[in-house]
Image (cartoon, rainbow, N blue to C red; front, side):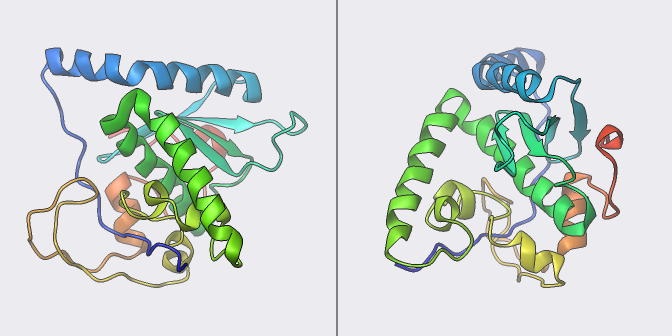
Amino acid sequence: MKPLRARVRLPTARSRLLWRWAALRALWLAPTVILGHLAGVLVSRRLPARVSGPAAFAWLYEIRPGCGLDWVGAVTLGHVILHRARLFEGLEGQLILAHELAHTRQHDWLGPLYLPLHILAQATSAILSLAGRPAHSRVHDHNPLEQTFICLGASAYGPLARGASFGGGGGGGDDEGDGAEEPPVNAATMLAAFGLPQEPRAHGSLDTRT
């Protein structure tokens, strides 16, 4: 079975809600975000960095060496991202961060359903990929939450970092479409949509609030 094609669309800006709706959204997101912070403190033993831009925000916890998770690249739990040291450095690293931030947008919609659905999708992808050699990774290749229902598919950030651009099409970013034409997407436009720099930054200087 062929892997899913990675979707690449510029994300729309995160909506600003009236306080009542903002409070409801906070309650909807709270279980997974709290779990993420608890896991982050456990694996990092340090305060998180924060990254924020027009399309998404998250707290970043760097996984300390020797805690048994050296095999992990990055894991997004709600609006919390646990990541290997130096993973987000360089252009491709910033695009990986953009991909992880795109997961936080999924969490805005799915709330406490995000984790069980993602685990199910990863397990299904791994089973489907057993018949052949993985293109990106077994848990990503056939996972719609990694490739399809997201504005930056997992197998697209590498080509973007190497200078590829992806053609436009129907508009609306990762969660809606209005049929309008979009310009081609490249690394610079994708990072700008998330408010991320193209130059590498150290862990403690990732705060890019807007």
